[in-house]
Length: 129
Length: 129
DNA sequence: CAGTATCCTGACAGATACTG
DNA sequence: CAGTATCTGTCAGGATACTG
Image (cartoon, rainbow over all chains, first blue to last red; front, side, top):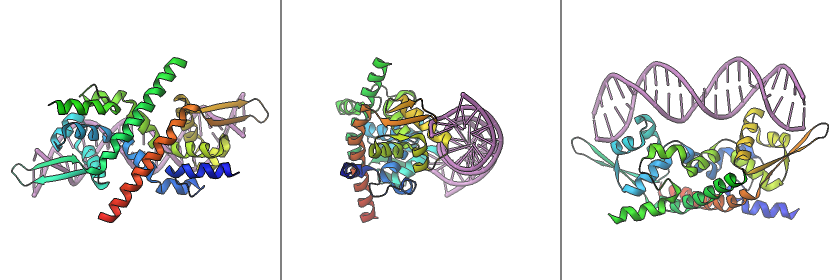
């Protein structure tokens, strides 16, 4: 009934306009964002940059332990979304520094909420399991 | 300095206790949750169940268009986290109904925030790109 | 130093056939 | 109907060597 309509309203977060989910999966921002954040190294990169403000490629690679290809890939994806900034210094040897942009600020709040929710989830599961 | 310490406090969402991120990646709830939500069909399943309250395996499969193996896998993962309930009715032919549990309620808020954030992100990128 | 190029492996998802 | 079993293809990611 209009119960269904109400639900569609708060379903802003996932392609509220179409019931056709296959279509939905291609373009949903939320899914794209979650997909990226679920990828290996993305959250650790963000976290490391929150802690250290600026990090060089080398430092990130060492902290996270991944192969350069994967780290580069993640950094490019985050840069493409405008979440991190890449600064190149023409020195010898070359220096590149990564840092978070203003856009990433909203993430702290989101991640914190997820953390709280996830912790409750774990706790409840342990108690009732 | 203690600037660093302050940061560690609000970094609750990602293994605030260890600087060793490689270790972190194994056990971080937040990453696990994001990882799951980024997987194919997970968000569409949650969305479909938010809209329809109860759905049978068949219905989910048809709406999402995936192979039974993948859908089953996702449903099991969500069930293991306690996010969805699986009810079996011993009829012939057998009937199984899936629905969201109370635990998944917190997700609406989280997803909505992500949606808002993601939309702003897109908008800003379009304007400045 | 900050990556790129290359090769390789394993996990994931699709398609299909089959079962209680 | 609600899955499981199997086989296959794709692709993310690891390891390594190399370059501006």
